[in-house]
Figure 1 (tube, rainbow, N blue to C red):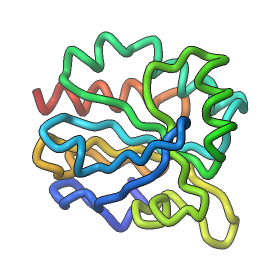
Figure 2 (figure 1 turned 120 degrees about the horizontal axis):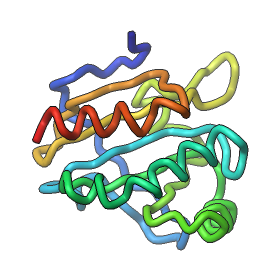
Figure 3 (figure 1 turned 90 degrees about the vertical axis):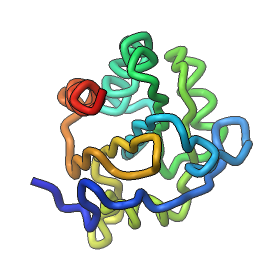
Figure 4 (figure 1 turned 180 degrees about the vertical axis):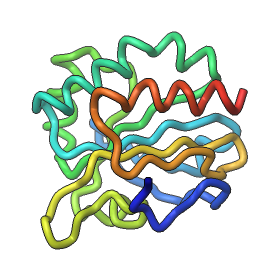
Length: 152
């Protein structure tokens, strides 16, 4: 069950956010590739670390599916850089400081003021092939891999 305003088949809303190095990454620049976008509450917390490290450890499987991973949270570039370095994460972490992108994707809990762990899979043409709002840290990777292999 998804709490997202978005559904499978929708065109993924465009975004352009700074990564851990301060460089702008846009969804449009990744057109032609499959993209796993996961939203997480905070760098270097137990659930978020588990989720990130699971994606790290499955990087070869994700690459085999011609996909890239983007992690998005409200943390700043310095926090993302420290988190990425500490756990040797091979993917970009994007800064959504004002949680606008999380809100667009249904991952922002307005009343509570935090991000709900969520993810979407976007195909080469920019359409959503899977929407998981919310998703458990322990199930995130497997759900992403299942969606990627189902679309292969």
